[in-house]
Image (cartoon, rainbow, N blue to C red; front, side, top):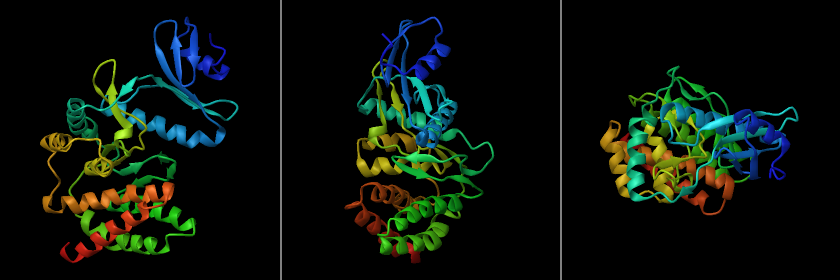
Length: 296
């Protein structure tokens, strides 16, 4: 029965599978043809978030087919409400074996897909969790990453708190980022953007790794490993396998400092979303980076 499926979604599903009937309820919809769809319908205020997710998944699919759920239809209805339909994936926890496959596919497919314009960034805003990221296009990676950090600092500052942390953040932007990232010889490649263990798993139907809920942009490949280091869920072999296919960027002796800088983005974002101890973690990262400045 399709009584629990909004008519607007039913219409879009019929465009995809015209001779089928549909049952279930959002987000999991079963077709009589055997296909299973993931479908959601938002409010008009969700338009930017839905579009950012869909365009991110499209970019990932172009680089690494089947590594993320395939987008089938998305857009905005006459009512102003956004909708989103993709393949449905029954996802289990990421296994050790699947994590190594994921590492290889990220290195050899996802992070091998360069920006067609040669620019860093992304054409539209995306959402990392509930945080809207402005994005845009930048000629260099240090300009792009400085803008990303500045975006979060601006949102934190507008909360009326974290003044000391924001002051330190401005020093990171003006002093650390240019020295640590400005001379890197890298090309912008498509990133997932929020690759922690909650956004990766195993497709139970195939046993293959799957990634989802992206906040994509074109950036330095190493940045895509950063949040996985913070929250765990990825074995050491994931990082080892990845770097067997893509060596650490030169200068290698600054790799850990770069990862501290890339982790800072996620600590700032978690401070923005959750507050609490994340602000202390962000400040400690800043202090470590500023202390290393004389050696850069």
